[in-house]
Image 1 (tube, rainbow, N blue to C red):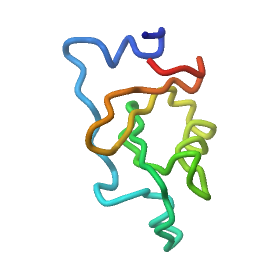
Image 2: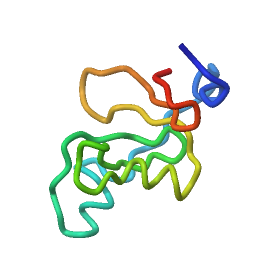
Image 3: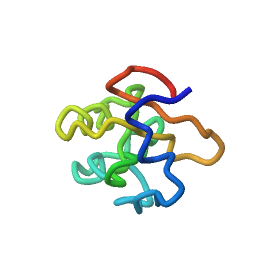
Image 4: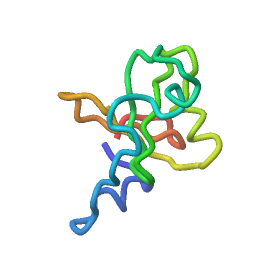
Length: 90
């Protein structure tokens, strides 16, 4: 599946942004908390944030404050992407 928000990510010349925190959720780390369940990478800016199963839900908060639409898992293995705007895996 895909959506209009993944067009840039699917372009042959697209480069994934560098993660802003290679070790964990940047927002949790700023709070001094290490309570995330899973990590997500914003495919617009490279922000690493915790998932909605985590207490602070920073990835969704990042979308709400920036409107950056697409994330992916920031963990080894999974290859899915999620579009917040269309609320679907892409």
